Image (tube, rainbow, N blue to C red; front, side, top):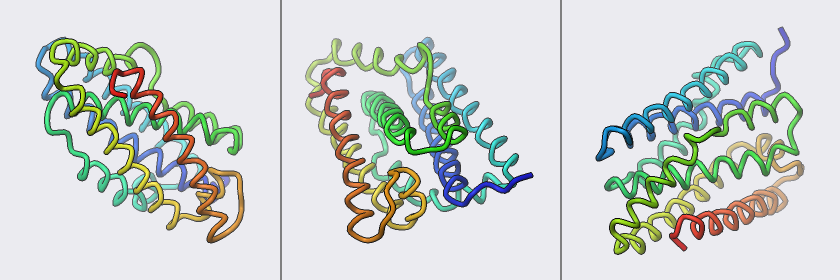
Length: 218
C-alpha cells in the first residue's frame, strides 16, 4: 500500500469534512421543509452527499489514512462557517444550500487542473450531480415568487455567506501552506501564497455574483 502525500491527504480530509457538513446541513433543511415532497427531495440530496463521504473514506483508507484524523484540521473552520451562518428560517436554508453547493462546485472546477488525475477525479466526484442538485434553486424560486418581499433579506444573507466562506478559506490557507500550493499550482510563501489564494477567491466571488443573479438575488 502506498501512503498518500500529506497535501493530498489534507485535500481529501477537507473535502470529506465539507461533505459531512453538507450532509448535516441538507438533512437539517429537510427537517424544516414546509411540504412533505420537499422533505423527501432534500433527504435524497442529503443521502447523495453522504455517499460522497463514503467514497472519500474508502480512498483515504486505501492510501493508509484514517478519515477522522484527516478531517480534524478542518473541523474548526467548517464548523465556524456553519455557526456564523446558521439559517434563521426556510428561506435562509435554501439560500445556503444553493450558495454553498455552487461555491463548492466552482472551487472543484477551478482547482482541478492543478491536481493529479486521481485527486482530480475524487474532487470532481464530490460535486452534487443530477437533477437533485438543482432542486434547492427551484424551491428558492417558489419562495421568491410567493413572497417577493423576501428578496432583499435573502440577498443580504447570500452575500454574508460568501464573506464568511472566504474568511474561513483564508484561515485554512494560512494553516495549510502545502495544501494551498497543491490547490493553486503556485509555490511560495508569505505574499506569494496570499496572492495565489487571493486570485482563487476573486474568481469564486465573480461566479458567486453570477449565481446570485441567476437565483434572482442580485
